[in-house]
Amino acid sequence: MGEEVSFLGLLDTYPPDEQDWSGSVDTEAQEEVEREKAQFMETSEDTLDEQMTVERDAMFADIVKNYADSVALLSKAKSQRYHGKAVLFVADKTVPEGMDIQATWSPYVDTLEEHQF
Image (cartoon, rainbow, N blue to C red; front, side, top):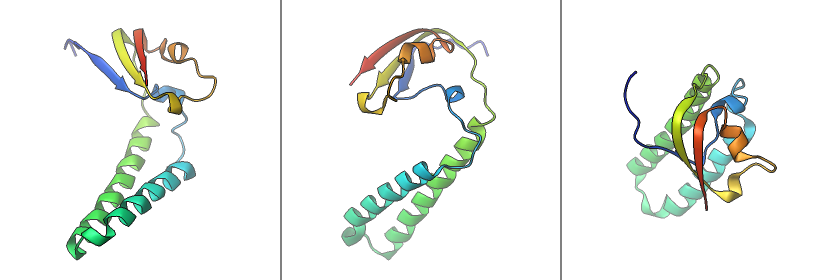
């Protein structure tokens, strides 16, 4: 659209085109949301009144809906190549075994600067 991008920072992510987004929200993702919800509820149960509990539950329902909407959009998306440098911050524990990060991103960015933590 003619706008200049002065910095493209990516936080622990990979190209959406490399993942299968054709299905609905997968079981593993649903289980992760439920674990996080249970942990949050356990730590907040004693400090919330009834109204705050209702708001908390609505917030988690919105998170799940947002994720499902994102998956639906990603299933139809096609990433264009970014002609420039991207800076990727990678959490070592989340890198799939055997993944070559530079090779994975090479179809999508001209230059990838990696920072692992």
